Image (tube, rainbow over all chains, first blue to last red; front, side, top):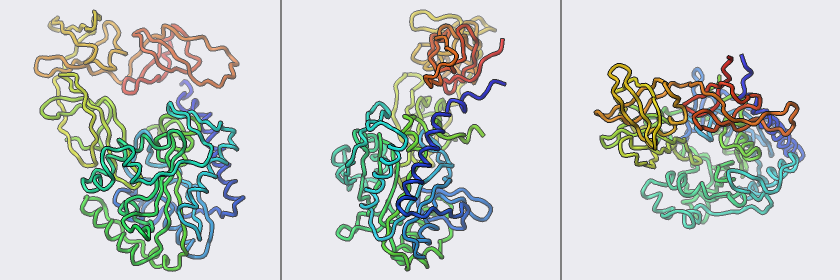
Amino acid sequence: MEKNWSFARRENALRLRAGLIQAMRQFFITRDYLEVETPHRIPAPAPESHIDAIASGEWFLHTSPELCMKRLLAAGYKRIFQLCRCWREGERGRLHVPEFTLLEWYRSGCDYRALMDECEELILAAAHTLGACERLPFRNHEIDLKGPWERIAVEEAFHRYAAVSMEEALEKDLFDEVMVREIEPRLGIEKPTFAFDYPRERGALARLKEDHPDLAERFELYIGGMEIANAFSELIDPAEQRRRFEFEGARRRSLGKPVYPLPERFLAELEAMPPSAGIALGVDRLVMVFVNASTIDEVVAFTPEEL
Amino acid sequence: MYTSADLRKGLKVIIDGEPYIVTFFDFAKPGKGQALYRTKLRNMITGLTLDRTYRAGETFEPASLEERIMQYLYKEDQLYHFMDNQTYEQITITEEALGDAKNYLTENLNVKILMFGDKAIGVELPNFVNLRVVQTDHWVKGDTSGSDSKPATLETGYVLRVPPFVEEGELITVDTRTGDYSTRVKG
């Protein structure tokens, strides 16, 4: 049998991937972050309307390490990061595999804006270590990595790129469609772009803006039209968090999706969590940016179809 | 019935009573938002293309089309000629209606012709076909340019990426679902 060319040809991408992971670890270690490993198999994933967990016996494979990492924050850990595999049911496409790699980091005593800075610094440091050009060719664009990166409120992005306003899109239940078809492809084209302040119902675990309670303190990083990272100022009010989880659970039920048990220990310990911010970054997709890949299949050792 | 989760390139469904084939598919999910299934669908009769985005759980009626085995004969102008091996009846299909299938048709190849009433509207290919490489640059051993693939032109005129070790004149297997190189055929 001839050697499997589709694996062999990914060697460059897998080398870059390994280098990127090393560079990110180094970045956090020098900033006094503690690397943690929390269980992949958990009894109660966060109830979010549109994120589906894969069952594993009576429990579930985590869809992100968020709840366990926040319990550590509540216990007094101030800066923690984790690189791990996560699983999401039914997600397969050009940018999705159901088993993927997330980098999450959490920091107490700061809000989402501080994480925009840190996210930019992380990726610039990694690019430097990898010897990447400052102008990255990606998807027929040339992305200028030099800071400061673009920051745009989601409401303003609708105004600039879409035919409808954010309010109209929400009213007509077309927010996701407009994001995917009209807005996302235009974000992060010249420079990486942070889109910030999302409608409150798009951030079940995010703190709301004090002066604007219909918006959540949440941002997404886009590079070349592709979502790379999602972050927010963490919601630390246990009663409000419980209401949001119950709302999300009811929505799951009305969509005919399995409803998960409430993560009671997380809710009980949230009381002790200091003001913090956290971020999840898709490692596979960041590798795609550095190797100019057009599909996630080019940067993973195996796709599910190849197993 | 198909649901949104079944959507993929090549799937044939009925929309407003007419058969459509999915010519582009992508799964999208804006952060914390719902799953969206983006498609381009070609009307298999008129050739017109729709650009549609579906949500999870939508249902589609499969387009069950009558199939007839026919042999590919030749191409003249923009028309591809096929013959029914039993009845010797000949039919033509336009290049547009064939879509990507034209990349894999070699003379005398037997394919399934899809019929809508008595109109031939497309072909169904085997998943893998063997095609000869008619042009590709010779790969110099020890080439350190790091290039892991090179372009090759096949006998049908189709150009695809192949591993550096594939030589002109060799027979290769191509996956007709993706259009990608699969393996060499040892002769």
